[in-house]
Length: 115
Image (cartoon, rainbow, N blue to C red; front, side, top):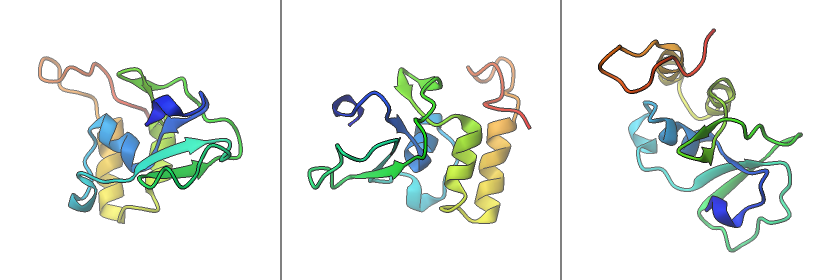
């Protein structure tokens, strides 16, 4: 999906949360469509029925990647998901973003973000 997009696109919202392997309510466990964020919408058309393009006021930060895929940075992802999740689900997701991984149990070495 990202290969056919301009370089300013990143995975965002529910799609980014899935890539981070963050806890989501059951209705989002295998969610389609793909959520992407971009500065422009000129490349978006009827040929993308499984894509939701979120238009940003400025070029998206593409410095954060997972497995080579540009994704929303953790702090921005938290804000993006606020409109989709209940307060308890958003708190659970936020806890996972700031939680320090267990040494020797998880491959991640540090929290996704800090407060």
